[in-house]
Length: 299
Length: 262
Image 1: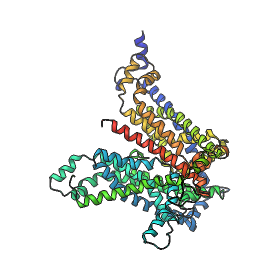
Image 2: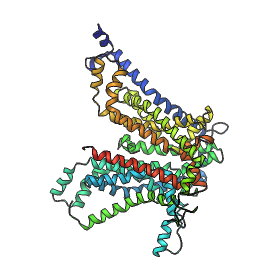
Image 3: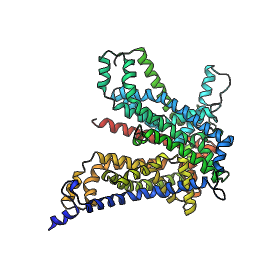
Image 4: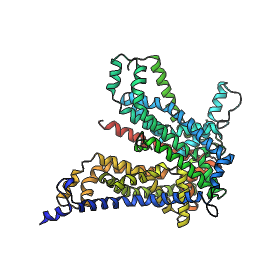
C-alpha cells in the first residue's frame, strides 16, 4: 500500500515518462521556492526602478525636459564626460597592473601564488572607507607621498594629489584592481599548461608563445575584468566623494546631489536612467561574448 | 621557467611593485591610529592609545557598531534560507521563466548602487520604514541574495541529486529529504554564502547613507560622515581594527587552502 502512495507523487521512472501533472506540480513548487527572493528584488528594486523611469518623464505632466537638460546643460554633459573618462583611465590602468599579477599568480609555484592571491584579496575584503582614508593620509599636501618626493628632492613644492581627479583615479584603481585580477586569474588558471609547453617545444620563444598562445586564450578574462571594472567605476560614489573632495563630480554624485541638496527628483531620475542604460547596454553587448555569471563572478 | 633572465626579474619586480601598491595603503593606517596628535602627520611624532580610548568610550561609535552587527547578523539569518531556496529551484527547474528570474536575481549586482539607493529610499519613504533597522536589513538582504545564490548554486552543482531522489523514494517527504540528505552535503557552500551575506551587510555604505539615520546609523555611515566632515584619528583606530579583522579572515582562508589537498 505504501509503495503506491509514494509512486503517486514521485516518479521512479525516468523524467521523459513523468506525468504532466507531476511536472506541473514540480514547476509550481520550484517557482514557489523562488518567490521570496524574487519578491524582495521586485519590491525593493524593480518597482522603484519603474517609478524612477516614470519620474524622469514627469513634471506636472509628461515632459522630456529632464533629458533635454542632460544633453544641453554643460554641468550634466561634463559630468558624464568626466565619469566616462575616469572609468576609461581606471580600467586601462587596472588592466596594465592587474594582468601581470594574475599572470604571475597563474605561473608561480603554489606556495607563492597563494601569497600573491592573498595580497590581492586582502584589500578586496577591507572596507572601501578604510582605503579612502588611507589614500587621504598618503596623498594630502603634507602626506607621505609629497613628503618623500620632497625629501628626495624630486619636487620643491607639494603636488596637488588629492581632492581632485588624480587622487580619485589613484584611489579608484586601488579599490577596483582586485575586480580585474580575480576574473583574469580564473581564466588563466584554466589555460592548459600542455599548450604552453607544446608551443615552446615547437620552437617558440617564451614571448612568442605568450603572445600567440597564452594571451589569446586569456582574452575572455580580460573582457570580463575590464567590463566589471568599467561598469563599477561608472557608478562609483564613495571614493570620488571622499578622495575627490566633492570637486570631481561623477554621475552618481549628480544623482545624490539632486536628491539631497535640491530635492530635484526629475533631474536625479533622468541621470539615473541614462546611467542605467549605459550599464545595461555594456552588460548586454559583453554578455553575448562572455557569460554574465563569469563577469559577475568576482563581485 | 627556472632560468633567472633579466626580463623575468623585471617582470617579478613590476609584480612586487603593484602588490606593494595594493597592500601598503592598508598598513599606513596602523601607525596613524597610535598617534598622539590630532593631525594627520606621518609618521606620528609620539605614540599613544588615546584614539582607541576615544573610540571605545564614545557611545556614538559604540551604538553604530552595535547597529552594524545586528543588521549583519539579521541579514545573514534571512538572506541565507531565502537564497538557498532560490538556488535549489534554479538548480532543479528547467521552466522557461527560470531564465528570466535568474537575471532578475542578478540585478542587485548589475544596477549601479546609487540607483539602488535612490530607489530603496523612495519606496521606504512611502512605506514608513525609513531610518529603521528592519529597513536596513531588508535592503541588505536584497543586496546579499546574489552572493548567497551564487555560492549555493555552485555547491549544488557538485552534489549528486539522485541521493535526494533515493531518500524520497524510500518514503521521506521532499523537505525532510532535503534537510537530512542534501543540506548536510552542501553545508560548506551555505556557510560561505552566509558569510558573504554577513560581510556584505557589514560593509554596505551607499544604501545605508540614504536610508539610515538618527539612532540607527551603522558604522559605515558614521565613518563616511566623519571622513567627509572632520577627519580625526579615531577613524584610524576603527580602520586598524577592521583591517586586522580582514587580515585574520584572509589568513584563515590561506591556511584552509594549504590544508586542502588540491
